[in-house]
Image (cartoon, rainbow, N blue to C red; front, side):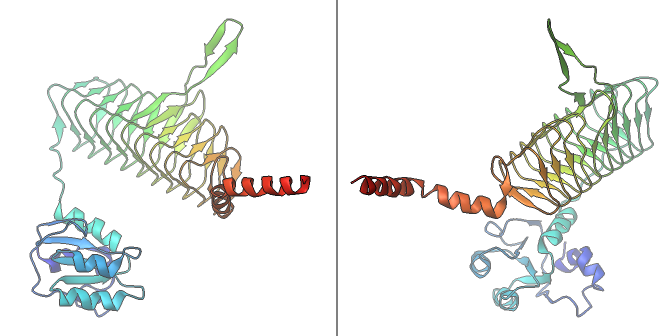
Amino acid sequence: MRFSDLLNRLSEVQAGGGLGSASLAHHLGHDPELQSAAALDQAQAGQLSFLEPGNALAAALAASQATALLLPAKGEEASALQSQATAAGMAWIALADPRLGFAEALDALYPRQPKPPGIHGSAVVDPTAVVGMGSHVGAFSVIGAQVQIGAGCTIHPHVVIYDDVQIGDGCELHAGAVLHPGARLGRGCVVHSNAVVGSEGFGFVPTASGWRKMPQTGLVVLEDGVEVGCGSTIDRPSVGETRIGAGTKIDNLVHVGHGVTTGKGCALAAQVGIAGGARLGNGVILAGQVGLANKAVMGDRSIASSKSGIHGEVAAGEVVSGYPAIPNRLWLRCSAAFNKLPELTKAIRQLEKSRGD
């Protein structure tokens, strides 16, 4: 694909009026043919890469063998980077969001081949299930009673869909995914391999003779555009619902307990654990291995850094760190002090000794 053809597919180029517009600085050079894309330090001839603020920009560009680049349009080094790329014989365009442009370029350079509509002969589909027009059901998949699958869905091999599951249009379930009774998926959801949606919540009542199981009869609702990573689990509540807000992205190996609700556009990184009844607002970010206690609350756009432990309520827009979590700036100061504890302890002992003398 020619560099110019690729650029015309980018949303920022389209919004700016195309390559003919003067709003986007660019240099096509000989308009090279691009075969693929790669990270900046690994790119070779015929490949596209990108830079964004935060890289060691000039040094990284000088070391790269990429044929074409998406450069940052803003920042002190923007003009110098453009001149450097031109001198190195690279084609380039300056974008406000090079990472977004690179994501769109990957879609163009590596187009996905849709699965053909139809149900594989080895799949087991209950007679009461409804499979929408244009959907694909892969080999050895099992679809239970009263299941409703929307149009244009892709069900990969070995997916298990229990009874009483509803799946919206354009969803994709990867190999080994399991949807339990009461799962409700909106449009455009993706469930990756070995993820489980609607597994029974951890509900037991203590009695004199041991634990008595609390039946889990509620719903698990994934709103439009939710993505669930490999090996993640989202639990069904005893009553009511567990709800994941539209556009939320869940990484691999995440556990969402029964009765949890998230707002729209949240991001949960790997190994996050959320206990039952916790509530997340819109746009919340939980970094890797964050834990939320039962009924903890994260306000809109709040962020918890890696390994944080949330036991109470985090205000909207606040950034917290540590266990138990405290404001990030205070945590940084505490961390700096922690490294000096041996010296401080020694100084205190010397003071105590001098006073004693």
